Length: 84
Image (cartoon, rainbow, N blue to C red):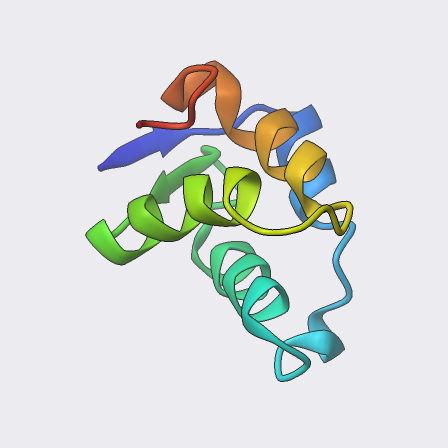
């Protein structure tokens, strides 16, 4: 599924340090999305695995701070339940 992120959403996505990619599932997801976003257009092609992980990390795990990040990045394009 192709979504188009705006500059604010990309900036929020970029807040995660790319060096943290191997620190856990959340970090791996965010860094992988950073790598996939087209910086010129904001286009981001989300795989079915991405579409499964985004709402799962936002809603199904204990509060760790990432929930608000995912909602800020994807609620405009995926809806308030992030595709669920």
